[in-house]
Image (tube, rainbow, N blue to C red; front, side, top):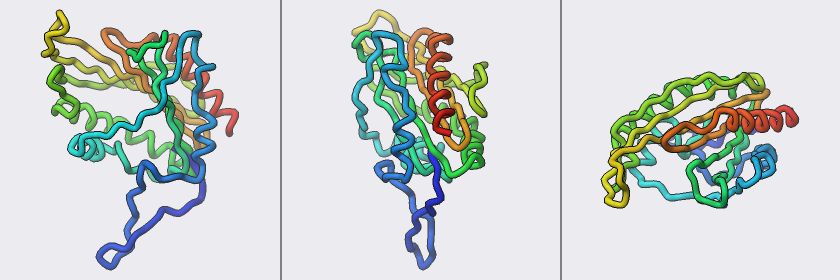
Length: 227
């Protein structure tokens, strides 16, 4: 989610100029600015550490399904810088809970607003893909998925918070239970032409509201200082 006046790349196809699909590996003009605004271990309570970022290879069919929802290799119009953290975990474990932070810099405030406006539609598509078995494994399968907008404090110029709830059926013999519930809480905050996304994954119960609010406030403060 980043800014700048760089024109989109184009390529020749069937005799016409068409907008090229940018790669996730593509360097954008303001990636360094985005990276400087990411949360660090210093923004977390004692005991939290950041695991190295791992770019895991997705199943091509799964990647295509998520791309149809607006997620994946394509980027939002007007995005000129982006960065993301690894997973933040507590007490040296590998989670849950796990927390990720992403920052995007856009060309202008209108581009940020346009990106945030389509989130409900994208998330509706996202949960439908999950219910369709996109992340099912031999050990667990999604039997129900839903999302809702949740109440959250207003930060920066705009704040949007959503919760995705997943109900899993467990088929592994290594656990005594046959079902589980997982939660993704996602908080989007924008200040000027910069946007922040905090994503928290937890099981059984949603992540603590006070703890998430403190992290969102820290992220918003970083954006405000940049603007």
